[in-house]
Length: 343
Image 1: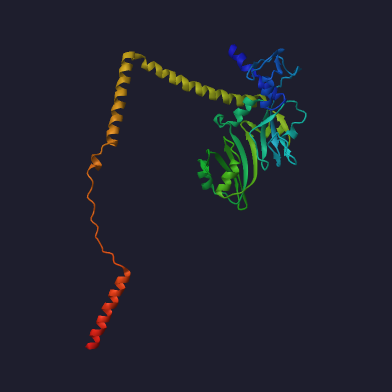
Image 2: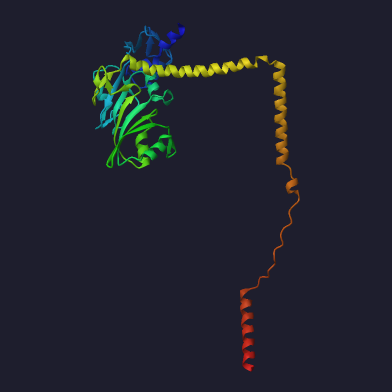
């Protein structure tokens, strides 16, 4: 029961941050300066755990605890995936009007792309979606110019490195292949910056249209609410929320199994005595010392270069001045001319 209560408790900084009071740093400063109270008691620790029944106030004003929100948004083209104000640009917060909670996105989309985005105020939930270790699959429909080369795409799907950035393997299905343009469905488990566009640009294709169809089990088609149109937002169902948290539970179970296997190895060594362990360690240390000494002897053994090799004798050539050579040549030519005239 104690573990469950600790899991329900939330850090004090997170509560103030989710209320929209200020940035994380300013929230921490407000706590340290003594402006925040829990159950009418001043708390100076930002990591203090707050339960659901506790009353939190800042500057003597009560903070309303936010309810967890899990929603899906179909982001249209031209909208920037940010919550910060950008002059002259459309941002995703324009679709959150009328919602009190401080929401943020889990996994962005480029302004040139469209499709499903997960919106929430639960940081743990967002981390499950965005972190590649949880292997949440994202499906995209990509339209490129020209006829797609299936062999080059197959080679890239095994994993590719572009400008010292490695991209993990992905699955694909060619939906249509034409001379003018082709349509491919990609399934990836990571979301690096402009990943799909960079891969097709490397293969020599330009992305005409990029649509994210689904994130995990959340798609634009739903049985209860129908098709999610561009610019519209809907709440996730209980099954969809449980799907993502189950992914985390599976990952935790895998880690627990790894540690359980490590514990099993300890039982194998129970037959050894402490004396045997000491003897083994002593022998190992002696071996290491001997190996080090042998290496030193090999390094500083001067027998290899103690006897110097005899130097090769170079042919000594007497150097003469060029001026003297010219004079001697001219004298020899004069003598030859005189003898030739006498004959």
